[in-house]
Length: 200
Image 1 (cartoon, rainbow, N blue to C red):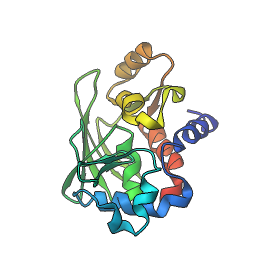
Image 2 (image 1 turned 90 degrees about the vertical axis):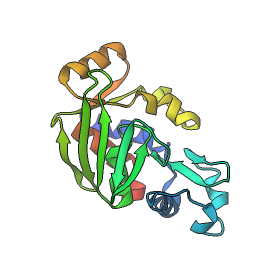
Image 3 (image 1 turned 60 degrees about the horizontal axis):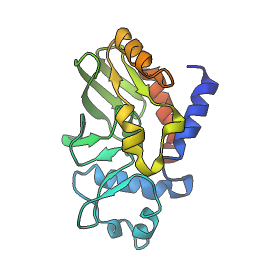
């Protein structure tokens, strides 16, 4: 994808994350969540609970503890995300590409291609995708105009998958002609641009 088009897409998706002024708290919350247990907001600071309620994409359990945020989840999904031996999950394929930089840790990812049914495995760190099986992968994205920050999992994440072959990428685009398919490197770069406030 041309750089200017990637920049435009990143800008449209940046609004699904907290603003730059909240980046330190967002990073702290993600790193606490990556420890593998629900997070009590007050442990992040006296005013943290007040700030979190105005953020997009924060999920709580019945006790008011954070169990998912910005794509990182303690609740099982189709995308397994292992950090330092702890089994976590993500809301979509793209989350697995930008979260390691936000966490400052590498992650092992297990997912699958919805078209071929084949498994996908990769290792991602703050610098990029280090290993991938299959080596060539693509990531699907719905039209940015259809994304709602109020329902990110229902309007965006449910359409964002790893695609394991060129034919699978073509098949997905044929069924979603207004969507976009990026190769794995462009998808990683998109994540880096969209989350730059939290990764520096």
